[in-house]
Length: 148
Length: 73
Image (tube, chains in turn brown, yellow):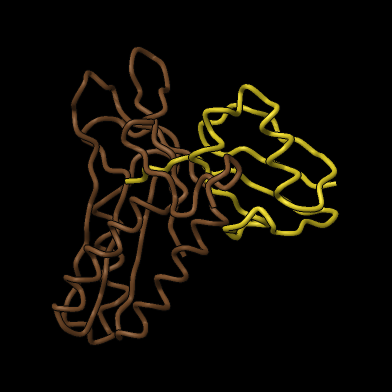
């Protein structure tokens, strides 16, 4: 299950709790990826919309892939506004050995960027502006416009 | 009737309309000038599962969602 929070993530609480939750399962590797909002282009922060039903389905499919390799995934994401230098995203993989964890965290985060139904907006001059130029069409997009 | 919902940055209220397949939905949305910029880049879900063809049949009570380009993280 994806953990969703209104506003910035409490990173120390989440990664410490995940560590404790999995401490007894004999995983040799725990790799968290933490996404933090950078100060650039004069933004005050970012803001996010999340569509939970499809996000959870996407995550569950990844969890099945992880389980087949003896691994486990965890993920937390923000809804709403997250200011610069705050964090909006944590993905983590636990696995018996490092190689599976190292490969899976890369594949998982890249697919997250391309497929997870989350929309990003820049907070700038008190406006919420869709980050169209940094967004990626989901695979298979465009059928209503004639792409098959 | 089916419901069409527009997610994320598409600033549009849900629609309800008669449609027997996604092809019918596409025909209606193509008439809407506000939607022109989105039809080429939106993914489409039927009852929260992504679909890949306009021939997808629809039945009464179905929910069709349009998902514009994403950027989480």
